[in-house]
Amino acid sequence: MDPTVLTHHLPPISAEPVCTLRALRAVTLTVPDPAASRDFYHEVWGLSTVDEDDDRYWLRATGTAHHVLGLQRGDDNALGRISFALATPREVDEAGRALERLGIPMLRPPGLLDDAAGGYGLQLVDPEGRVIELSADTYAVSELEPAGRRAIPRKIAHVVLNTTDIERTAAFYTQVLGMKISDWSERQMTFLRCNSDHHVIALNQARWPSLNHVAYEMSSIDHFMRGIGNLRAHGIAPQWGPGRHGPGDNTFSYFTDPAGLVCEYTSEVAQIDEDAWLCRTWRRTPQLSDQWGTAGPPTTTVRTAMAGVPDLGARALVVPGRGDYFYGAPIPADAA
Image (cartoon, rainbow, N blue to C red; front, top):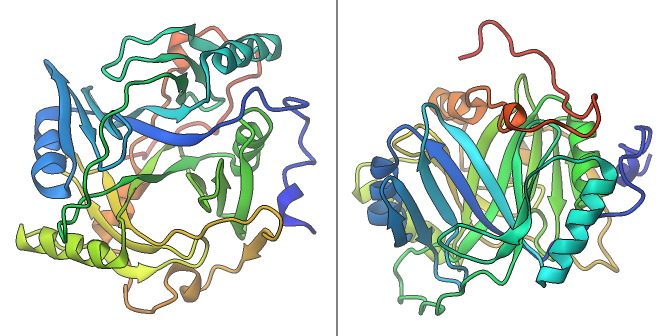
């Protein structure tokens, strides 16, 4: 069976996407102590604080995006939102009208955004409660020089999301947001793209919805290794890696931040030629996880952190347009 159509047995959500995503712009995380997380990402991880407001922080990489990481206060670790770039405000308006027709709830209809990056956008809620922001005309910053051999991320590479129903979630992101499936890892993971990068979102079948990890792309494999060395100099050892994944062909090294969330350095992400790429289903073998065979098994700490805590997102903040919009298995009583 063609792995690109494994979700087509489900009832269609939308006949055509509501928009054309240009890029993954930023991710916002909610943590109990945003100042401690900010210090880690600013002083150790390689990002730079570009703006702050009380207990909210925005941090940039070397690219032109105003920020790639937002931090805000909350009682528990959670995914605040994922921000994607659209080309123009008109595309935002068109997406808003299409979402209304589909009955997909919006936290914010199209309009000016009250964010440090400014811009014009909207915020929708996916069927597991995640907030997805679509925006255009956000503030840009001057691209930073590579800074020689310093280990500084150049952008957000991808976000991995734990989902209780991988096929339905993949159908939403492909049919509604227009993403394409690059590869499957049997029925456990699927990798979604919106541009030439092999994946900017990956979905992982899990017991509850939560954030699995956020990956930051380094400009070269040398900068990737120097980043690992810099963290070791700060007394922080990898929880898994370094190695090279199968799907995406990217290098990896995983760490946990002060909040207990998983962050990854990566580099050399596979680039997709739309005319030549063939989606495949990878067998879940040791070589799938690490082609080099150098990483060893992930630690118990990082496995637990990747599972995360149950995150129902913005479900309670919206009245969905149709009664069966939200889905997901009940949260297990023994959830951490």
